[in-house]
Length: 291
Image (tube, rainbow, N blue to C red; front, side, top):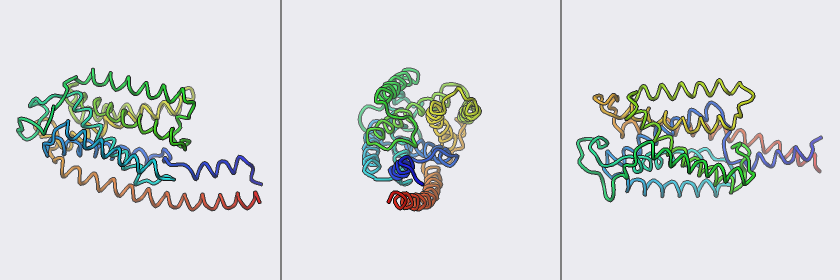
């Protein structure tokens, strides 16, 4: 016979709006963050809108996609991954605006200036990263004091989602700063930076087998690290050969990555519909037993 716990579990499953963390989740996360890097650079540099104007536009897009996600009554892969993508694009230009300036080092195609307004605060990667880490720690501190879970599969409230997406936006911005530092300032280059981050993620996979290390902590470290992996991979695809890139261009790389991401989202949508149908059957069974 079904118990009250079974009923609560079925109801909670129906309310869930965030995905299960699986291998497919991480593949889509890396694809979305790599696309966020190439698309952010496409708007800011290739189209020469500049870091400041692009940041405003992409942040507004993030707000719109977030509202759609928050108003949704259940998990929808297209809504969820569109917000992830928008945080990655906004995070790219937010990081660039904080850390860079309008020097020729960061401009593409021989441009001498970008867009309208101030083109970068020039804080530098260490200062920018320190600020972002502080903001992220404040968010996690508020989250901890709220008493709500850090397990994303158990987040079912508006307040929990709001904290989750705040952390996502800041972590993606921080990850961009880390990736750009590895690519531009560490001496590792784009490929070397990507390999270093991939190695760090491999260590996290091994730590999952260590009982004393909380999986929630590993998830958030991995979530931050997949962003610099996407940033360095995006730079590797788009930057000139003379700078160590493949020179595939921001437009072409973004189009290919978008096609890959949309395909993965469509697959996730099919899987979610199957799961939803199974959940509906379980709820009906619970209701029948309760009667």
